[in-house]
Length: 183
Image (cartoon, rainbow, N blue to C red):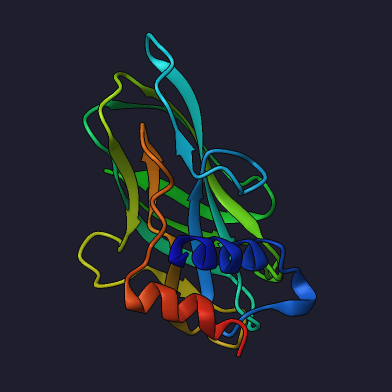
């Protein structure tokens, strides 16, 4: 039952538009451009899949992000693309990244920042995770307000599940963050 409640809350978050932004920025890992597929299964010899990093800006908008990624040994990373819409800076070094949209191009709706082609090499259960930028304690997002103040980004789904059911965050912090969207 708890999984159904979490999934229902997530779907409500996933359909939010610019007119209904939360007070915090959210981020999730997905296997599709529609930010709805949360798992990938091995289908034989080096199964190709797509990894998308999607952000839901806060009511104060989204100007930049800093985060890191963790990949399991059964994933081969290939081409990575930064969102092409007004990127002022984007780099990917040792699975850590910083991205800033051009000044004046404040993001006020769901936006993807990175799209990566990957290959799953076996049927062992594993996960790809998003987390803090190297040396930081949390994922940082920067609003569009004057001076671009930083704040933590809340993870909607902290893992992209590989060869297993969706791995939905059910820790009190993650669950509470989703529930707070509707209070």
